[in-house]
Length: 457
Image (cartoon, rainbow, N blue to C red; front, side, top):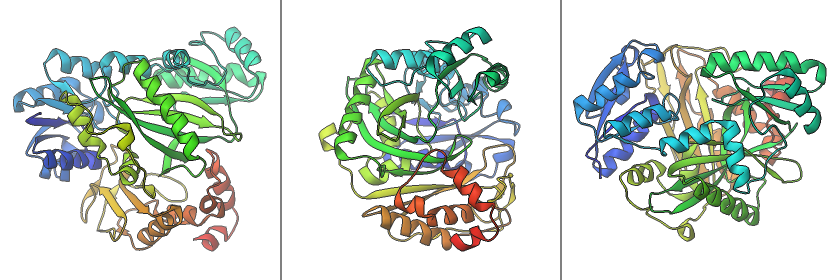
């Protein structure tokens, strides 16, 4: 087992990893930018190293600085958390060259699955259902028009690299394709340094469902069930839950077995998430694989009782998974609301100093956060300041506990999305589990009607 792990991240996920390391008896090293000097992950790590100015390109994305911090502190391994360098094959390769263990998949697997077009081909070969689309990147307008005609409109143009909605455009008619193609390519180049895009069939009102997998270096792979992530805005998830209200045990076993076989086919190790769209008929179609820990991993931990971060560390250290598939059980229902420092109506960022911060606990409540009274929410990084996770015997109890927690939450000094989550959790479609990736469009349309939000809060 490792003696010391450097955490190449910040905020709540850095604290989450520190918690797991403390329970395993492993020392930790925090890295921080000048903007995060007084952050809690710096306070609670055993050692800390400043790696640069506030901008992430000069600090949290600075591979040489992170490797240097690991070497001068004698860290055995680096955990990248999520975001930043968590899906960087380059960081994984540098770690390998420097004899530092990267807590994540093999760099070749990250490269394969990080390229969306190559990932589609690999998953298709493994027998995973696919939406019709191009076999690889689309180079020009002529090929794009032919592919879209063969697939049938509407289609979606997607960046081969990256995610988060950047480099994506929905096209509903041929006249709009050329401009959408150029725009998506420019956006992908600016965001990811690679302008390649591909085309696939677009589903209008699908559910977004993902399966959590863990694989060790001894050929063992298990799934930990699914998470429903359909409530999202501009492809950014807002609320996640497990299990999905739409899946039966039979479908769960079938899809779980499918993703385990797919993971084995690409020799996947450590934690990963296989993401799918599900149409109105209950058919699944592959989207992508996230080769990292997910923001929403706590909902899976709540329903399975399995500490995913500890398993990540054990796997990276060469140990076998601590359980078999037959030992994975699912108990009750869990929800997660991402609390962002944003205006709840306009979604405009709201950085600044938090003057009061209180999120109540109670039965079935977990709070993952770096925030506290008088802390500063920086404008340089992602706006998420906390995750509220609730667990209940069933979905109704999990929702009731979420509403109770949101209603009793006090955050002063900045605007947050707490009021938005309260309104969503009272929406009849949400309560009934009638979800799709277009839920927020319906919510926004209702919000535009005078008095409607006040009535539902």
